[in-house]
Image (cartoon, rainbow, N blue to C red):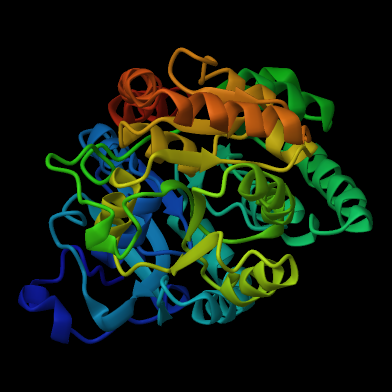
Length: 427
């Protein structure tokens, strides 16, 4: 077995040849002196460390006692962070993914599915003490847990609902598929993680044995999303300094309630002509969103920033906003979720206005470290924004309290320690 994290030929990783597919690799490259933990995710560690910022802390916590084998696609352009991979043995399938391109992500995800059978054989041959299955795409967690090794399954995202939740019949089907999959986890040696108490209750309601559930918070990336001093001006971003700007950011998809938000923004814009909605991000949903904006005649009230090239640039835009908005559709899959937009938004120190779903309400205390509005309630949404924008000094204090709340609730070091404790118990 070869490993980009330990191959001396990778002195110049940009020009290193891609490793052979993991299904053809042998265990000879591993020491075998320590029990193995397999970490499975389709994205390489360079992407995972940004999307799930506790990766470094988890690996550092495990490395003294375990050999961590990370199975993934290759990074776009062949660029590998050797420092990040220092305590990893990385096995890559023979194709790469450009995470910034929505089309490439979906095509490579389909190709990843075609490799799942071979990946399962590779994992079985590795005989891990524990599997951390961060890959929660439909059907994969159950197949991984079905190998019979102790397995950790985080449930930050409900992918059946993400894929089918645009329509009422899709949400009905997604709920049935999720219940079926969750029940299969109870028949395997799996420990299932929820990020909130509400999420744990949702798992139990879907048929999971409550004794198998642990609550582990989501991690934030304090070095990526943070207050900037000085903050960029709106003029630097091409925005009108006289207007008040409210930003929503991330991947554009139906489960976040963009259509509902745009409906409400017609009312908000008519009542407050100096308000502007800024849509940052996309990853495939920009065309749909532009059509919805045009359909509602909101071209002058909504600015599409598009998919910005780096997270640092997203942070710059958020630092220039008057309010960061974190809406989510009022659906069961979102009730226990903590969106990354929530802890990233709070981490900027800007005032955050969020949907008062049960999981989010476990973190944000209305009027203390953020503003909450009642789900599916347009009047409550408008009132929350008015409170946040009416008194900039008070909103700034609440934004700073939100920054402290994010540091308290989403500490990646605590997540790393929690994973080490779970692995020790399972191993």
